[in-house]
Length: 258
Picture 1 (cartoon, rainbow, N blue to C red):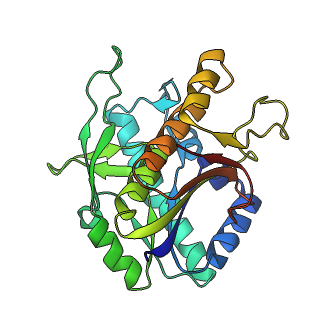
Picture 2 (picture 1 turned 30 degrees about the vertical axis):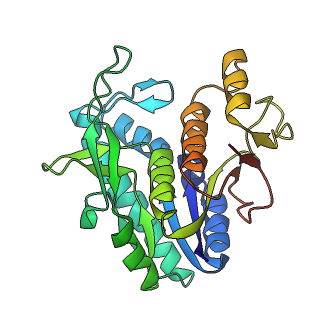
C-alpha cells in the first residue's frame, strides 16, 4: 500500500492576504504525514511589475512573459514569495525547503511554442518532474515548497503556471504515493454563480467541464485550474479538490473526478 501524500497549491490572492495565508500555513503544518506546498504569486508579481513600469498582459488567465516580466517573476516567485513561505513554515515546525524547477533539476520544461497565434514568451510547458529526487527529500522529512518556475536544461528559467506545477508534481509523485491534490484559493470551490459564494459545484467531471466551459459558467483563470485537475486524476492522482484556503482538510469544496 502506498503512503499518503498531500499536495496543497496556494494561489496568489491568498499569498497576498496575511490572515488567510497565516491560517493556511497553520492548517498545512497540521496535515499529518508527507506533504508538498506549491505556491503562486501572480498578484504580487503584477504589483512589483507596475512599480517598475512593466505592463502585465494576460491571455485566457495566463501571463505573457517577456524578458522584463521574466526577471520580475523570477525575483518574486523564486525569492520574495518562496522564502517568506519557507520561513513561516519553519516557524510552524515544518522543515521546509524552497525549490524552483531548476533546483536539483526537479522540473524541466520547454518554451511554449506559438499557441492559437499567441506568443506567451518565456513560459515553460513541463516535460519532466524528478519524482525520485522529490521522494528522497520527502522521505528525509523535508517538505518541498515549490515556486512556479522551471528550466529548460539550457540555462533558461521559464515561468510556469502554478496549477500546472501542482498537477504535474502530483502526477509524477502518484507513481510512488497515494496523492491527494488540493487547490486552495479565495473561494469555497468552483462556483456556478461568481457572485454567490455558496453556489459551490460539488463535483466536476470531464463532461461537466465541457458543458460549463461552453455556457460560460467556468471561464478565465479557472479554466487552466480545472484542466490541470482533470489531467491529474486521469494520470492516477487519487483525489483533486478545489477549495477555500481555510478549508484544506479535504472535506469541503469541489471534487474533480474522471
